Image 1: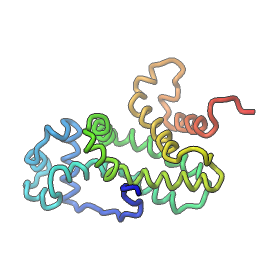
Image 2: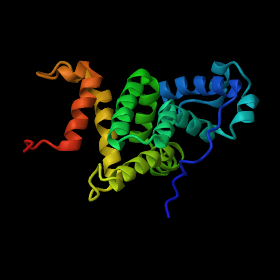
Image 3: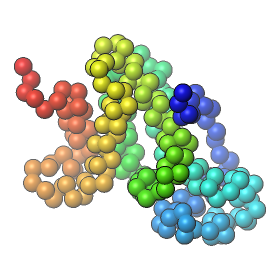
Image 4: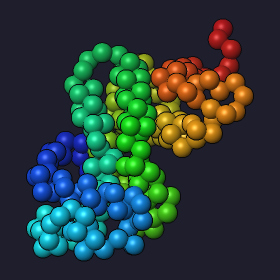
Length: 213
């Protein structure tokens, strides 16, 4: 049985004080990393006492995970919940999410960089925490959507749903990482147009690179 969190888990809205602490912590963690930032520094940056931080978050790790969870979810989780309730073609819903996901990465660059650094440099134990407590909800929602597309015959049923999710996200993450370099390479006009990149990438994912008969 998977120990990933259920996508039905209720969404908790942080209080104004907690949001201020999260915003200050995000800036510090993004610029210096988890180990180099103290709770005293976060309290000073947020304009609160350290006791106030512990009123909202049990310890530094809990605060850090909430920073990552908030950075990961943003409005993507809200969109996925909306897409789950819709009844249109799954492919169209996936295309909408993928376009939104890339736009969110580019719009929230600091948050995205924070998450990427943790994914790349974090320990195995922290990687497990990320999988279970940060990425799990959105990943499960996408899995549910992919499985619905397979059940309805819109997507190939012989491909693992999780692999499709990974491929959907991987293109966006690489574009986010490399678009400033890509735009200086020959014949990469899509590097300046995220929507065009999304359109072409989804077309390739859905139909492959073989000539269409």
